[in-house]
Image (cartoon, rainbow, N blue to C red; front, side, top):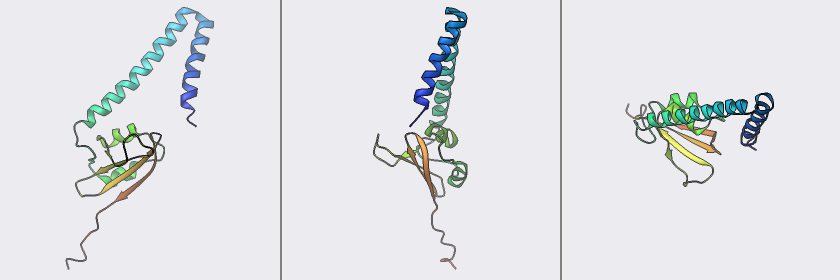
Length: 136
């Protein structure tokens, strides 16, 4: 269960009630101003990440190996988009759970990430087979 969907609204209401009891309307106005500022900061971060992602082709990354090393279980999709500076290439059906995205580099290596409810649950690095031994 995602407790953020419950805890954040409850914390906001608790702050507003506490502000009302301490300072009445000026306190509520201060809490409301702080909450709006918090939402604007998150909105600005999302827009910045998406603006950077528009400069790259969908599903491209500088190095799939480095992306594989930086990934951690539980990070959200927006964090991965910020790391890659590219939207992932959707591999699963649209709006289906789990969501599967792929990022590839110029060497044909790619990382396939699986997101469950927006959180990274697993990822796989696939590298092309090297033909070093076959050419001798």
